[in-house]
Length: 281
Image (tube, rainbow, N blue to C red; front, side):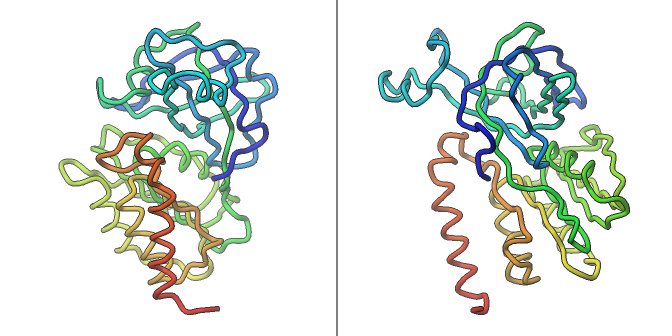
């Protein structure tokens, strides 16, 4: 995904309100003057990168990440976490983000759980690159909890009566959310329970009876199941690359920094594997 308009600028926002929409999903609504020139209306997978300084470290205002990395020791560098824009209301100037919460594990989830109105947060963005194509005959949306905000946003932008197959993996029925669309969407909630993340999701997608015609697919989430479904779509079903938005948002056993460090090489190797088996031309 590419950075969007003014995507490298550091912005400042204020927490307006928070809510628990499921037992493990927290919704945080941001506002404030720092969103005056923000826009996230082109794509349904718009994202921002939240900036978390280490405890006790403060940065000059305005924050310059390049300057920080040049002048401060590495242990004082911020950590960035990427989150999809669930809603953007330009009239109210409100930016809504959803956070998966796993207790004290991680960085952004605990922050969201403790966020209170008036708290400040820094971020950069938006980036993005996908929105449902009106030219597609049907749509495929697949993901785990990390992709659920983008899937929800995509469903709301589907052309009226557009056929869609939607597969979302969550831990159990309590994590299902109400999703709205004017498209003709068949939504399948896959419950992971004690299985490895993505295992049941891959099975469900493989068992699908695809509608006829050209598909526009969005597949995101844990890297290993994304890899399996990418091979299914690109190699087995011969879906053109330009009709796919597919990427590992995260990878088991890696934090965000370590995954970003190897993600480009991971994607390059996948493309090489596909090139070895796909017909030329």
